[in-house]
Length: 511
Image (spheres, rainbow, N blue to C red):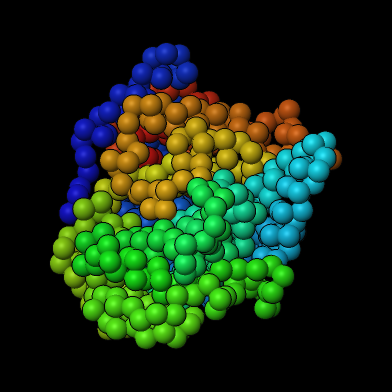
């Protein structure tokens, strides 16, 4: 198991001290250490940090009272937790983020056609894209910050990265919210086969990995304008990333055969059935025999692809691939092999029941090991969210948060490659990244991040910033997660700037 990296801690602490020397923090202040809680809270904070995006005010006391085991069980059954009325009301108000597939696709094409016919319509298209981006982002960020169903929100992020799409690729700009709402969120604690099928049928995935164009025969056109012919992009990522893993035992021939089985899987907003625009076009399907992963696949239309998803979801290599990624996300960057083996067996024995696998993971000695606490380094997404939850600042203006994520190298829905963002220390710990985190911590901790709108609901940020978060309140929220060395650095700072130094400390960047 990977434990605390002393080099990481020294590096980040040195960066924080460097900022203080540069004049952002002064000397003085002694009330800091007096608020520290007992070490008995370490396990409570561990589950709050791993199963969620860190403690918000009141979380530590609540979980301390109910007990860690009860909290874990509660998080594994989010349907038992009632969402705050204000959160539900605000999510319901996001009209574009809640729109259906057909409506979004048709509107997207209409706006782009209008620009071709009349260049002055470009401003309308830009406004729509901006509203779509902001509403899509709020649909993700508001529950992550305010929902008591924290594990569900962590798993939404986990599975979106696993089944990643890129929001800047054409039509997917309009479909990201629909994809997350319909193909990811309902299945994050369900059966893997259902999740796999939902992503395979959604137009956002079909468009992102080009399967909507794939068909038997040579097709017409070249490059990006090609309409037809066999496209192997989705078939390759379906095995390499979504199921078997890069070492899953398949060959290039298996990729080609799977691509043939998935020909005709496309979408058409004019032929939508209910909420879905997925259609199977038999005219584009390859109706010859295939041999895939040692199985003879007789011609059977759409059922060929469904059978492939069945086999992939239950393959031993898939069980191990998913087990490794979950253990890496919740335990350590290099998870113990014995834990991965046990989780893979749990996955197989329970027919891919994600909730059952997570229950076994959270009950494991490896997860409960004190050495695991603070062993993970926060991704920019987790760092920003944990900062906002700790400070409990209402998110009214999403633009500063989106800007921060871009500056930190992790724009929301902005990973271009299908493998998604990494959650390891090696991916994110670097001098420039640390400097930018401290810049963000300074703005948030000093009350200079314009997260609120003006009283007239003007979309422009208010000129009056929210008050700076109180350092003593932050410490009460975080409990005993700061090392003595970090506490000493913070205690020597000006009391007005201790919150910023806490959020930029090396201890806060780990979980």
